[in-house]
Length: 391
Image (cartoon, rainbow, N blue to C red; front, side, top):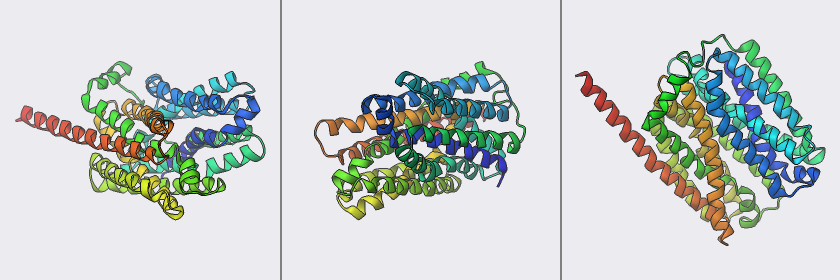
């Protein structure tokens, strides 16, 4: 395997760990800083906001540098502010450091996906991108449970110290293993932003937001689904999260295989159809103790069948400005996270069962299917127009 891809995977591991470990140690952070758990939830939102803002901003700024130097800068930024998070002793300081920690997330994955595809052998681009995202999925299996364990049993600060250590490893990997690459944006920022005029690109970004929002509608309420609906003790939740993480690892490589066997956009369509079926099925199977755990693995698998194909789809839609488009797609993932959690919470707040979140997720995935057909239609229309112009 290309060592440059391993460096990207290590960076992905650190990013996945810092994004999700806060959810596991939220009560510990709230107690230590003497704030409420809803207030502590602002640290999740601050990180997500940083991702949305930082993706286009840092991709644009970093475009004047060679891609390997941009990745090095992004991981250095990530490491510094995650390490500072470990030493924050107030609500305000941690809120600011979490926002700043999130800024390089989208740009790293966006630029990293394009770099991974260029490092790959012809026809193996999807597998290379999946290798980078393996770090993110493994973080849910190893990093997040480990960080949560130390956060519960020692101090929440330790979790962010561990993220800082992973960041240092990623910096060293990029420094010594990543080959020299050309500028991220050789034609300048102004030309890159012209790609934002393309309807097809915006539809793929909308597809990512709505389609992946279906997964987050389920994932955001996985704990009460397992304890309140299925009747498992709270101790099972951490094991269920690992099970979901294993599903993500599996789905990541299945998605790459689908993208290689079909076109990326049709791989997305297949994954979304399976997502709808799985989420609707879960409204019945979640009441069974074994069934809910089986579905936890399956839904995790199906959800990450989306990651590589949809990233490739947006790269294909942003020809000439692939890194900007790819980075914007990471913003879309985080908007999907926020919208899925919010919309799924509405029926629960209204008094409906926790399984209602699955139906909201199925609805969002269904909307994603419709958008996918729109993208396919636009592509066929553009292809036909190009052929007509050439004839």
